Image (tube, rainbow, N blue to C red; front, top):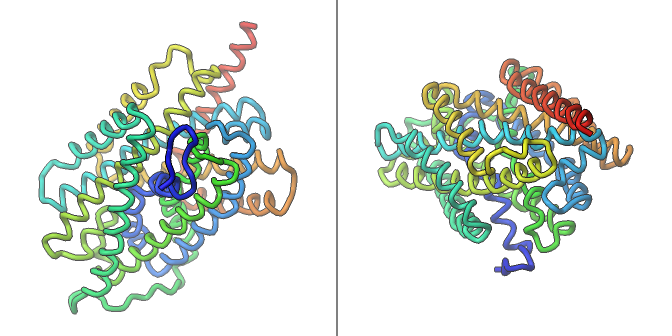
Length: 410
């Protein structure tokens, strides 16, 4: 394993970090949620979601080359679309994470509650995960890396075990074959399914915030991200198929479906433990990445100078989201999709800025084609997209107001 001193992370050492940035609530809930909502179209949903990532990976690689200091996405949008829209990017990420991260922690808590049979564990586990992620971030990159190495290894081993248990251990009471060939309902469920599944892949751009920890960010971002996404995509597809083989679609729990794969006593316990590990590595990566974003936003005046320290700000906002979702746990899947909608809008803005900055080339044209799919998925997803639209509008209005006030003072 490559050392992580002042020289930064090499490719091998960075892959667990990238995998940990992505892995979390998505791998816990989305295989079952995607199958429950899209049925025979599930594999097509995962394929399209993965394909959508490829042009964006190239865009993020070029973005890291543009600015490897942790503000790459903001630099891209600022140069392509102007200062006001560029400054809105960190705020939009803030509202993604303050909704999505507590939601993921609630998913992990539900796995503990159901897997271990501990009533009321959901809220306690979710709060403990968020607090632990904040503490890990406060102790620096070293603590985070070891957390992600251990958690990624546990997640990988357990993912393989679940696939084997579900595939080899299905009984006559469970379906032994499942129709995963898209049918007539595909047109109605495909794009909303993609919007939901896309939450599984968000996080690879987190390395643009953490690029300064890589030894050679301009060279290493793309291969590291491809390796992490390929591994993660394999697990997502394999677990979706395993859920489909193990549980009738009408009986699938869209949040804790992995617990239904095998009911042998040790299995739910192991799944619950790894659910917590997966969510912890994801939360640690996002808290650290968002902390960088908030620090930069305060330094450049996007946020007021009197804004509390990033860890304090995140802790307060996480508490509000957690309180709301714990009192309305039926909104869990909707909250994941709403967070994904904000990401889709962020990616769309980045693509437009990318095209404006670099002009029409093969790389930028491939990204531009995604805008049609993104727009259609947002429209077809209905009310789940409203959170993203509201966040984008409010962030743009805030940044425009801050810029006007700065001009008046000068």
